[in-house]
Image 1 (cartoon, rainbow, N blue to C red):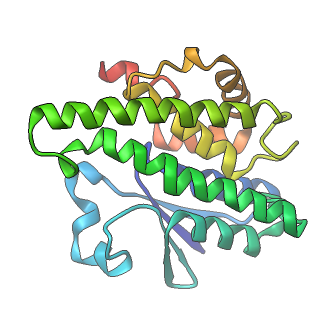
Image 2: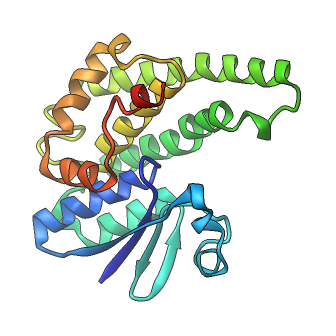
Length: 219
């Protein structure tokens, strides 16, 4: 059985939704292992043996760990093509992976600068500047995702849930913590509210106990 190590609300939500979609399409179940980052469970020797970076997600398939979200998603799609998590046509698939990689290597690290300002500056004034610039960049990134989402119908690639639906949800949700109200991106919010009704997304949300507006509870 495939195992997924995930943290609630983290980017591991993306393959989490993917595996729920696989389960719905094929009946192939998986084991979901919650990693409590706030308790340092990602820093234990056992976890670091699977992922030396101490990050989520980790996918364990046939007893072997796989790290890095784009690689994890690519593997899930190739192993379970019936789920239709990525386009099958080569050029469309490459474009889809390009979008997914951009979400992961550009948008996601911008959020890191907002959430982890201490990694990038020492003084309070410098950290405030890092946060301000990161929030402005995040807004532009989410606006770009919103433009992409306008072509979605009903999901990112048509009538099947994809990794992109899950990542778009995750990034818009994080935007709330950075002061970007999802209501200020109405087309993106409408698309996300439609996507979260899909059974695989709803199942992952329930397991992780998160919602689009969870950030309001922390305010």
